[in-house]
Length: 227
Ligand code: BJW
Figure (cartoon, rainbow, N blue to C red):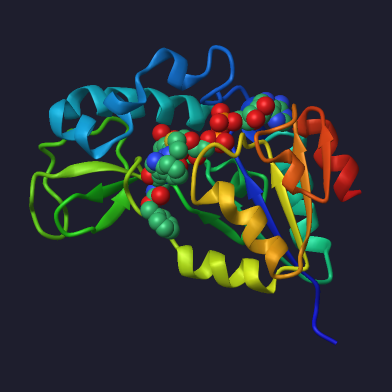
């Protein structure tokens, strides 16, 4: 018999109790910074220094943050579950890894990574980034954060879609379901036969699509579900 396949999608809500801000909640990042200016290729082309300032500050905050009970519960699940667990995170922090998870796909990239806008070479991000810094591979002065902005293709989509097609269970944690393609994963998994569960502070835009939706803070809901 084949082992059970679990795909878990996480969003900013899972890191909220670690002190990292969400995007669309009251006081969220996109209510304080216009997303067109800091999270689009057009914003980057207009004012790279402003974009880097935004990401330098978030990199520092993320580096100072610690995983919470929800990250730890998922790492425990990954280590102890007899089937396969894949964590697909939209988050650019590394709190899943800090909690001990190994099988993590960062579909929107990582704050601790730098990317050459010319040749796509990746390397560890310095504390503060300068767009004039030369790429270690091609030498082009085109350093940018290794994150996925609106209008760009999220990372490792083939791998994610294959995992969703095989999934017996799909769980979405701490995401508003406002951003595609991640917002469509629940339908993708359900169409292929997976059971679907949402764990979120409040009902999300897509809650009704899930077989079950539980509301509350991730630090309580996720350990209760895992254990
Ligand atoms: C708690 C909690 C607690 C709080 N416990 N819960 C029109 C229709 C459809 C699509 C499009 C369209 N126009 C444009 C598009 C495409 C666009 C898109 O989706 N736009 C929408 C806004 C409409 N998408 C793209 O451009 C993507 N690329 C793309 O589509 O490529 C083409 C493609 C085609 C075919 C296949 C595949 C691809 C790229 C999207 C990139 C998103 N980038 C960002 C920034 C990353 C870098 C950074 O961090 O700065 O990613 S935007 C931002 O939103 C970030 C997040 O990962 C993402 C999702 O946010 P998330 O995590 O859901 O956070 P919130 O704040 O929205 O929600 C938090 C939730 O937690 C809330 O529900 C709270 O209640 C809850 N919560 N505290 C539990 N304690």
